[in-house]
Length: 248
Length: 258
Image 1: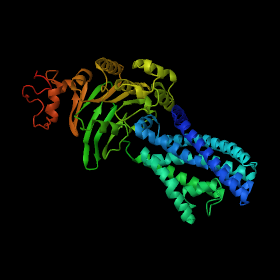
Image 2: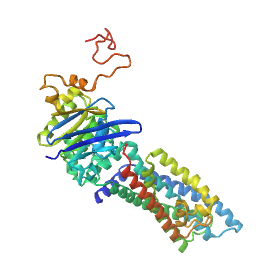
Image 3: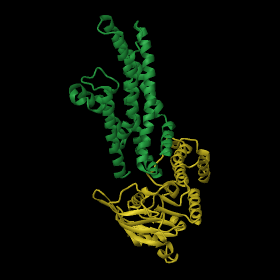
Image 4: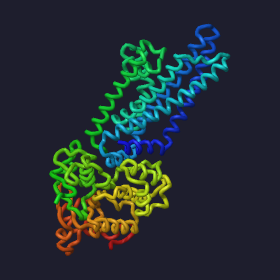
C-alpha cells in the first residue's frame, strides 16, 4: 500500500494538472471575492448588512475550490483510462483495492493543498477587498469555522472525485457530468427542493462550509457525516466495479 | 512440473461476438512460445484474460498455477507489453519507469539498468509524446523487464521496431529464455516468429494447434506460413482473390508480379 501511494503521489507530481487547477481555482476565487465585494459595499452603504456578515460571505467564497478538487480526483483516474495506463497500474499492483485507496489518499492530500490555497487566497483577497471598500475584515470564531469547513470539504472532495472517476471511467463524460451536476442539476434541486437537496452530496458540502445562503442547510457535523457516507458508498461501488468489470 | 501459463477451456464472449472459444494449452518453463493468429483471432483477448484484465466468460487462465490477480508480487513474476497498456504521454520515459518501480518497490538503479538494456537511455528524459513508435515499444519492453520477471507476455512486440530493433528483440528474447525463463508472445509476423520461438500456438477463435515449431513444420521441412494457412484457412479478399492465388500481371502498385 505504501508503494502504491508513493507511485500515485509521484504521478500527481509529474504532470501539470494540479498546478493548472490550483491556478484556475485561485484566479476564480479572487475574481469572485472582488465581484462580491463591490456588491457588498452597496449593501453596507444601505445598511442592509454588516461588516461581519460580509467578511464571512467573502471568506466562504473559496468553497468553489471543492469543484476543482473533485475534477482533479476524477481526472487522476479517468486520464489513465484515456491513455491506457490503467492496465499497467493494475498489472503492477498487488491488489486492486490498494489502487483505489491510494488514489483516494493522494486526491485527499491534493484536496488539502487546494483547501489551504483557497483559505489563504480568500483571507488575503477578502482583507484587500474589505480595505478597498473602507472596512476591516472581521476574523472571529465563525470565520475560523468557515475556513476549517473549506479545508475539510476540499479534503473530502478529492476521494469523492476519484470514486466518480472509477465509476464512470470515460474522462469527457466524467468531467462534463460533474460540471453539469454540480453547477446545474444539483444546485437546482438544492434551491427548488431544499428538503431533498440538503441530503445530496452538494447539500452535505454546503453544510460543511456553512453556506448560510442555502435553505434548510444541515449542521456542519451532520454534513461531515453525510458526505462521508456518500463517499463511502461511492468508494464501495468504485472498488466493486473495478473488481468486476473488464479493463478495456 | 507446474505450467508457467495455462488456459483451460478459456472462453470470452463480447455481446454476440465469441472472441475466444474453449482455448486450452499450457506454456512450459524455459520456452519461447509464439501465439499466432490473424487480426481478430483472439490473441490479445486471451492474453488479457491470462493477465486478469478481462474476466473469462467461462473456463480459466492461470499463471504459475494461480489467477494473475492472486500473484503476491506480480511485477517480479510476469512482465508485460501489450497494445492498450499505455503510458501517460506527458511523462518522460524515465519518470514512467520510476513510477512503475515505486509501485512495485523496485530500486531506481534498476530503472537505469533497463533503460540501458533496451537502448533508450539517451531519450529517457524527453516526454514520451515526442517518441517514435519503436522507442515506445522499447519503453514498454523496459517496463516489462523492470521486475526481472520469470515470464514475459508480449503482444506484438515487434510492432514499430525497425529491422535492427527486430533483430535486437530476437536476441533479447532468446537470451531471456536461455536463462530458463519463459516468453509468450503473440504476433502475425510469421517469418519473424519462425526464427524466434520453440513452440507455437495457432489460434483462430478456437485452438488450431499447440505444440513445438519442429512438430508443426515437420522438422523444418515446411514453412511456418504454409502450415499456418493450412490450419486457419485462407480468407477470401474483397476482390474475390484468395491469398496465394496468382495475381494478374501488374497487380502490385506501379510494378510487376515477382
